[in-house]
Amino acid sequence: MANPNFLIVAFPSQSHINPALQLAGRLLRTGASITFTTTMSGHRRMSRIQASDRLTFATYSDGDEEGPRLVNSSMESHMNETARRCSEAMRQLIEASRDKGQNFKCIFYTAVAPWVADVARCYDIPSVVLWIQPATLFEIYYYHSNGYGDNITNESNGSSSPTQLPGLPPLTGRDVPSFLSSSNPLHFLYTLIEKQIQVLKEDGRSRVLVNTFDALESEQLNAIDELELVAVGPLLPTSEGKDSSGTSLGGDHFQASRDYIEWLDTKPVASVIYVSFGSVSTLSKPQKEEMARGLLSTGRPFLWVIREGGHGLQEESEDRLSCEEELRKQGMIVPWCSQVEVLSHPSVGCFVTHCGWNSTLESLMCGVPMVAFPLWADQLTNAMLIQDVWRVGVRVNGNEQGVVEGGELERCLELVMGGGERSEGMRGNAKRLKDSARKAAGEGGSADKNLKALLEELVSS
Ligand code: UDP
Image (cartoon, rainbow, N blue to C red; front, side, top):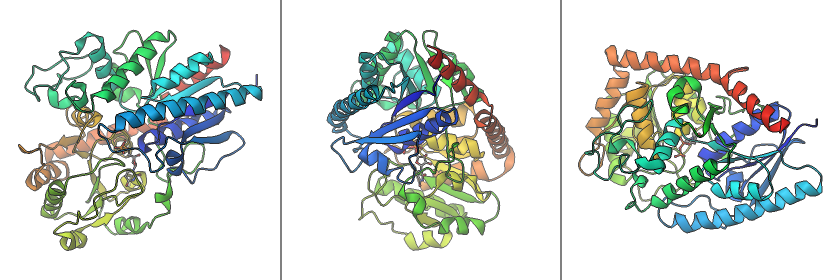
């Protein structure tokens, strides 16, 4: 039988596109042909990826050529418009492939996009979702939407009695995404997740591919009876910015100056603090000032990514820091970097992260312990996993205004980097998970095996 033809549909943010491209790389290695579709702004985030005879890109406009919108309530109408335009683009692609006698064998898509499954069903094509957060989050959302809504809550801001779910420590309000609460302005995001879970339940043959690995979340992967969670991760670029098929990953930022690597080369092993808040989130001015104070007070070198635009939301231009000169003496500030390359550098000793799932996995894959500095959504749960489950980091505490003060950051950094029993323990755990992650992602590892089993089933159906 001819090699199968697959369609991949990715939401246009960096955290969807990166794992979707990695999945494409793995599918290409099996001999499949891929049509990869995302918005025009999403496609710009991977401008250096070359199409080939088995990898075709198809873009559509979601009406916002600048990229994903601010994470606020205006996002809801934009998401509805994206759903409409994405569905239309998919119909055209499916019909064109039929006309050429090259039907898609399966449609893979990054969650959360339940409309993709609706279109796939209209054409009687199987669809498989790629969950781009940890299995733990899927478990929390699943139980929340299946009768445990009153127990899994952050309504009382952490004072409610902790909830116990399979494979997890008791969860308090600060461990679960704030938009679970119906009074939260972003609750529509949870409604979309609920719809996604409902769609999966209705589709009798449902499997959920999860960007995680068995050794990291084995209990969580098996915590749901009616759906099968399949670990296909970690789906991550290598430090050279290449995916498993040799395709170059990333966007224009890979062309930016790489002085920071030369600067890292001059620093002692495990001495540098790397600070980044991903591709979407930003810090308030007071929070940035506190961050600066905390970094300066450690006396340690640091590499701090402060985005200046072109990648997600723009940092406010008037947002200059009062102590910029001192900061530049002790560390380096860059607008963007090749993060996997930075985390793989021997000089990096700690990652101050917003706990986005890609950043978290990248840190685990590189064995770098973390200071968990979550801002919202799944980041809160990921911070709990980092500190309490995998014990590879320390989570910061905010003050009454929700600001993490410089002294608190310094305290956490010293716990991670200062030596001593706890610090050594975290380093040892990070090393163990790094080894498991690499084994899972390597040739013949669990990621390959699990994906192969799914493909065999799809192709034989
Ligand atoms: N990233 C990067 N360079 C930077 C900042 C971020 O390459 O300077 C990448 C990072 O490696 C990760 C992605 O952007 O793959 C961010 O995804 P994550 O899920 O961590 O956070 P999000 O951007 O969705 O909040």
